[in-house]
Length: 177
Image (cartoon, rainbow, N blue to C red; front, side):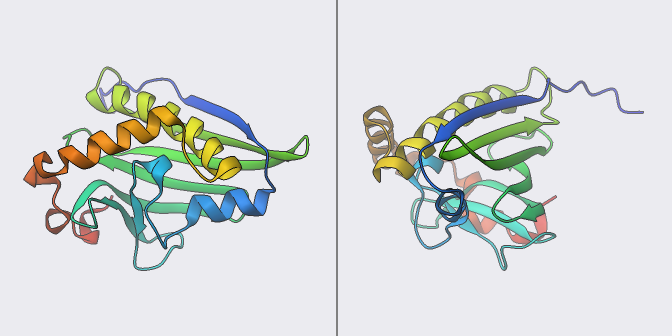
């Protein structure tokens, strides 16, 4: 039996004023960087269960996240393993659920199996709040919040300082768990 302790499951929920198909399409869009994912892009041989993925940034030069697509039920559910490449913490699980509600779509981001007290726990909590808030803004208005735009501009300026350990070459798909 493992002696690892995991943080409680966290659920981040928001109502997006858009049809479920629109919300799903934006969530899984692989054609361009997604500002609500810190200008990251899905990178996968095929967007389907069982396949590995990376979220790449800085024009595809870095891979801050790697994982595997565990489940997919369009347009209602996407489940992935999730590992931050700059940390040595074990992978966790991220679930995105979409449900039609009140003329819009209820979007939930759920994090599970995150090592309690780890750097991943803090990073994922902060990141999940950012994603949910800015995903809503992006789907409804075509742009993320003003604060997110400032943060993304700062990240862009700091891109040359990204640790070499996060280089996409260091994270081939076979490292996905």
